[in-house]
Image (cartoon, rainbow, N blue to C red):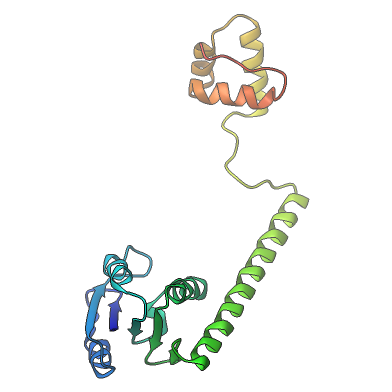
Length: 192
């Protein structure tokens, strides 16, 4: 069965051009959706549920299937694993039911993997450079080292964890977590 999927990102846009092309391609069922690829796409999820072994999903343009090359390749690979073909009508015409279409998809998959590897390398290089410059990623610690020293002194003087947390203007659980982080392997503080 040939199943068509048309999507536009906003309600101001019109799917008529896509719908006409899908009808001309011989789609027996056509699903229409007004949703950004950044948001949930309930109609697309419904299409994926409807597709069966031997069916072909037809879209007007490749970007109707996904927001990124990686997402697109993953979607097409998931469909191929279920013996569901994909045909793209415009832009870069692809038909995974043919040998040439499967070759195109393999090339896209290789490009997606290359893109993933490049991104990973850039991120790792950026993190290494930041560490060399003394910057550490992540959320800053809730309590400064000076405040931690004060907290330990107050606790040693007999203050309760609750009163120390109030004095430092932090949550009791935050103080407890920071004290435990400071004393890794030495013991732990019990919430009082």
